[in-house]
Length: 163
Length: 270
Image (tube, rainbow over all chains, first blue to last red; front, side, top):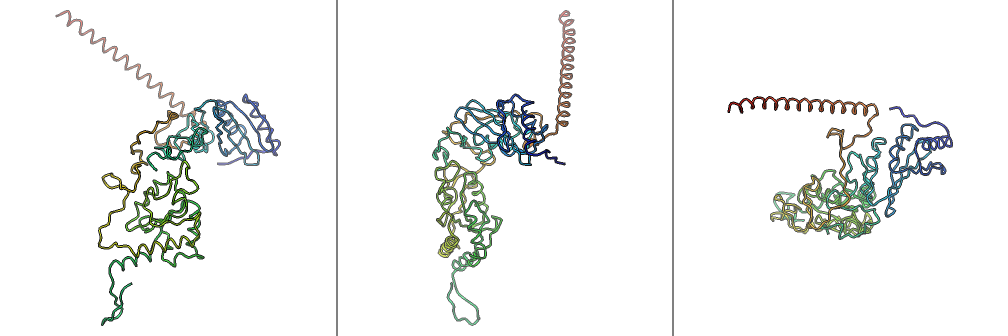
């Protein structure tokens, strides 16, 4: 598969990305910080924003997905790289204790395992994910999401039957 | 090893079979090539030229548990790894020994009260020698192996029916050193749930539509034109199903009508 990297110098590209995102979607915030474009979108718009990044703007790479548990809401960041030094942070906030958001596996295939990790550690459910199993923790006898703020380290509870 | 005696033939000794077999076993220990964490780096260093574990006959790290004599548990055993470790141990042929190397393999070490770490390898497999340290120096591991050799030397194995140190017997019963948790069948999802565990509130099951069962693990990226084609095929299929259903309904209706028509004259005759 022929890969074409985005053209232009860093400033041009950042500006093009910013205009591309804000022209197509209703964004809450959008700004340029250093070599990165920071975009805050509504949770429902995230797959559309990432589809714009992949299809219209030609950003090839999804680096990672981070989740922060803000007790009552979850903050998700999708970090994109255009492989020439510019980065795009797509941020969103999901309210509620049981977050659900659309999967971006169909846009960036690498999101498959990133989303499984986020589900495993935080319980964020990705609707439309083809295979949302736990990635790190074992499947049975462990019914917790360990990186949640509400998860208390209690070995006795974690290893019921094991220790 | 044995007593050299003056026989008529040269090169003869007398000894017990225990001593002979133990001597052979202790001088050709094959460790399993099995590294878990940073202790494995020290284990590698022990096997390399500077420390040269081959001097003690234990330098050949075999990659297959079927050929291994000793398992060096070198590093943190996470609970997910415990299943695999147990399976590897069960695959090793008798006689077999286990060295727990480092604080993690002994007791969980710095990960005590962690959410994913087993509190010591001896919770799931029987350990012969503990080598403390974080990580232990190569000299310490060598000392551990020499200690194991001394233990093997003292051992009385030949001619004595030893209890087979399997974790799970063939009928499914569990031997005593295994905790309550049963490892057999967990990977197949057959293990029974323990009582007293509250079911998880946040468990999501999503409908998987539009994919054949074989491709459910990873569909990857589907090109847009293929997606379009799939959608059209789906639409056509649904339309065909609807038509067929409509035809069926018509048929049954007409059949009912016929039946009614036939039934009426019968009723009149009666």
